[in-house]
Image (cartoon, rainbow, N blue to C red; front, side):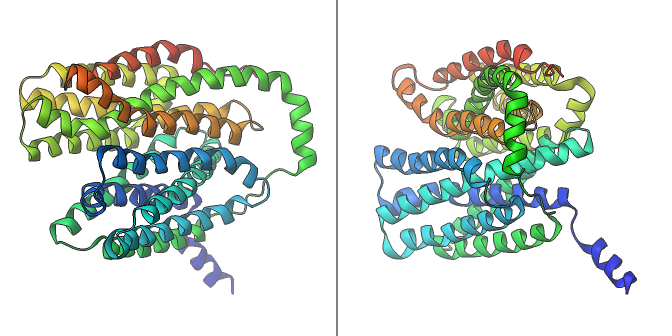
Amino acid sequence: MTQPVAIRARRLPTERTSINLIFLLAGLSFASWAGRLSIIDDVLGFSGLGLGSFLLCMTLGTLIGLSVIPLISKYIPTKRLLCILPLGLALCLPVLGVAISLAGSTWLAYLALFINGIIFGCLDIMMNVSGARIERQFGRSIMPSLHGFFSLGSLLGAGLATATIAMQVRSIWHFAFVSVLIIALAFIAHLGLSEWDNENFAERAKAAADERPQGLRNLGLLLLLGLMVAGLSFTEGAANDWIAVASVSGHGLEHEEGALMFTLFVGAMTVGRFLGGHLVDMMGHKYTLLLMGSIGLLGVTLFIIGSTPFSIGLGSAMWGLGSSLGFPVGMSIAASRSVRLGPKAVSIISAFGYGAMLGGPPLIGFIVDEAGLPQALWICAAVLVVSLLLTPRVSRRPRP
């Protein structure tokens, strides 16, 4: 009787593999609709303001999700949330597909993306808190590789979007396929998750009383850490929105070359996240962030001043590599401040990061009207300098 159980247990995914899959499906969900933005824009006939409002629905929803999930997680076990939330993402995609392909309804598309943003924000906190817990168990840095799986999912989602657009597959069928794929990945991930209930209220109250002075000190550091992560996230989001456009409109490259520059950015970011854990283990948080931030700053500069496709491509790759670890390493630092403050800390850092990543880059458009491209992207270099100045302060080990 024991042998079949043992064999069956070995076939189940480990908890780390399960969290990897959840990060991957989150990236897949995000890139699936983002990869079809040009189609959505054409079908729904958005103006520039209308498209901006559509994207703002995702931003507002995500920030709401980041804000409410610490309260929700007090009453619903983490394992159950990590099962329910991916299913919510899976269901939002077909609704968005109906709005685009069948109803042609702007308000339904707005609503679907807003709810998707709420669910995405909630899932982001839970998967990062779970990843930080596993990281503490391993005793070494794994958060960068977890975010690498998010980037890998984004590459998969963008690739599927590109392929289905080329084959003239309607959005509803594309989104339905991705929805089924997300449900399958969520089911596999659920098999390897362990039961992890939240602390009971008595233990939580005692921890609050015992750690309040340390918590207040941590809160100030978390706010500075949030500003640092916001700067790095802003430069990441700016690349997502502007690299391809700046390559074509600013540097005069062809459209396929602009797409290649964006691919180089995403590819370098994915590589950086998968290799970043080893770098953190060797160099520590502070020197890793300083090194990668400096590479990112050089990459942004080279991209702006580059005059050949090679120099612009090298700048794009360095920009992606330098931006790859700010968010995941920031999560690791936040979660390490205190066991009690862990979920709250991750929520604060996520709010800073996603707020800057999703809400900041569209504002570059106002600068573009005055300075043009790629010169408007100098703001990314300025923001990176501020993040580098904050890094030594926020990446210190907390006092025992």
